[in-house]
Length: 332
Ligand SMILES: C[S@@+](CC[C@H](N)C(=O)[O-])C[C@H]1O[C@@H](n2cnc3c(N)ncnc32)[C@H](O)[C@@H]1O
Image (cartoon, rainbow, N blue to C red; front, side, top):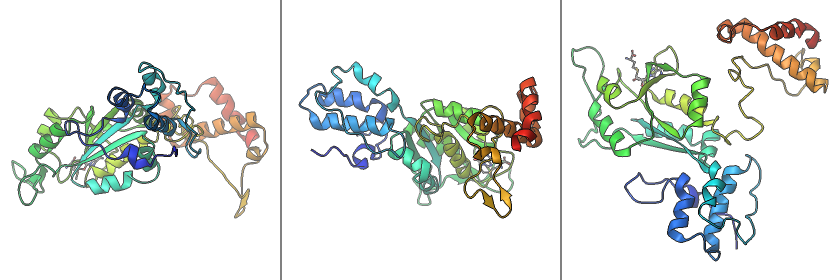
């Protein structure tokens, strides 16, 4: 029997809660168990499907599919399934927008697309116009008190969000929100999920922030035309940190902001390019020395470009100063 299962069999978009269809991936194995009877050893196709789910979620990116465990199947009771599937926990992210194609198109590609295919990310994009009933599918109106521009109305937003019941917290994207940073991205990537609401026009009726959303999130001190690009920034910065998305080699721990520092510079072949050479230490093969050089470079760059980050770490330690003093010698 072929053990490979087409991705669509496992990851086809799921209907919204209350509308039938299969349950979310996190509860899928238990659901199979209770409804189909995975405990019966003869239920080979279902056991293979489950093995495929586990393999997709646990194998490092780029590695070939592992063969399924040979019968007798090692899971013998439902109690063992949650443990075996502990790594199956999805991060679900819902996005509400009037441009679902824009968000879905970007998020269906590259890293985020692969993360969804592998079942690591459960991304659902909702059209804010979906519950409108007028012929123009209106979601905006002119502001009370007058002034330029339109405002995204409360009612269509409430209707869609209440129907979907998305994962919380629900963040309204906007320049007045809490600023996204790497620490928040890590926090969100470690949780079970959250949701993003993209504003448009002059903004969103304030009753959406007051009565529907849990918090507001900004991606920086500038004004975008709408929340979609901000949502994509949040999606990518969080999505890449979801366990398993980047693979084992790139954990994200030693990147910029990981330890409150900017990252060291990178080089690749050729060693000489237009009279610019790769630092000799990187070709020395001395791994301890390379690690010290990288750390010293990270410190030096942060001192020069982002002294606020050094201040936030409580200034330079004695070890930091020693390392910085070594930089010339390490460079040479
Ligand atoms: C043209 S902006 C509205 C700006 C609003 N009139 C103001 O001055 O704060 C339209 C939408 O873009 C999104 N947006 C704009 N700048 C943003 C930022 N820096 N971070 C996150 N979302 C932003 C928000 O969803 C906002 O409702």
